[in-house]
Image (cartoon, rainbow, N blue to C red):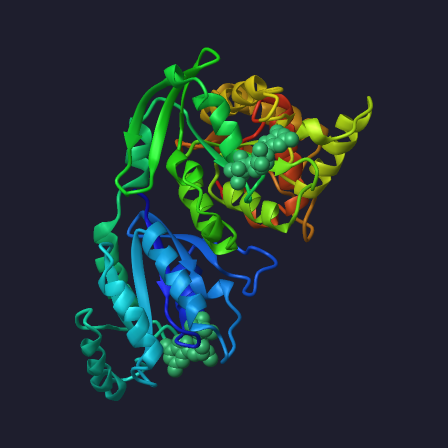
Length: 435
Ligand code: GDP
Ligand code: GDP
């Protein structure tokens, strides 16, 4: 299915250092989700041209000595369920502990690829000691040092053998893939039930490669679309759902295999930290976005309420706030149709290809309004622009001194692009390159 690597292991073995190694190098995009115990828990990177994401389970538990073993057990079980590849870190300098044995016992029963990784192998003397981890029953350990980087390349070379080519699998489907995401109880299942309420709308349930991932193909409101990962939403395991780790893992899976995400928020509660975490997952993955303010039936309204809500939401999610915001109710079915219409429009926007001539006309008009500011006495000249041959809208602007173009001007260009071409709901990338 995806290329999602989970890092598990007891506290202090070096999970977070390993995580930074994996996503921190080269042009890696490091995701920072604010507010959790660690600032780095989810990241995206690539190795030999293959994209993957990494989740550090340690980011969700307090890193103290009296940590519940039970807590770690839960994380490991969820990781086995939701990730594609598990890396199990142990500390070669400290040797085997009881908690390592307990975790190994769970992992031995997993059908997913498990990598036993002996970390802190900073030199050969420690490498000799690491042999003892063989007794965990997970084969010979991969010896690495997350601090100096030794061994991590070999490990990744082996891990990528399990990867699927994400781009290839995504291009095979012509039917829009929609993910319904949001924190527990915002109404995800209810919204999906408005589709499956009428069984005849279901064309085929598509079985995923993993036990839980079931995508459903609908034909409704005159549109063809796939709702990804519906099994995970319909099968309610409330206990697990309450763990933010579980809900983020679920969201990651659904978001990564979608084209457009419906992010549900609860109209009675507004946007909270957990909503923002999912929002940033969607943006970092460059997916289309429709914001659905659900449970609108519960809100007391007058003729200003929609405008006020819209303003508040746009402020909260800025700078990427050129997104459709639909006030809906899964319960009364109010505007459920509009939600799907908006998702289809965003899907089209995300595929938008702007002809080079139009883009360059746009550039000339834009430069007439405002040129890049002079920087360190140098004149910055943008010569021409081109859309890159990527799946999502990305633009290159060729100029003499790309390093002198700063964020405000970049935002100015982005806003102009959005005014001129319909890119609503679509995160776009703008690069300045030397020419
Ligand atoms: P976590 O609790 O599993 O996420 O562990 P951390 O990544 O926070 O690391 C715990 C400690 O081990 C920190 O002091 C790290 O600097 C240290 N550490 C991590 N990796 C290595 C390594 O490869 N070699 C050595 N010597 N120390 C390491
Ligand atoms: P999920 O956890 O996101 O899948 O949320 P559910 O679909 O299970 O909904 C959680 C609760 O909110 C249930 O009691 C639903 O009946 C209720 N609910 C969902 N959508 C709406 C809505 O639009 N209006 C109202 N009033 N209640 C809703």
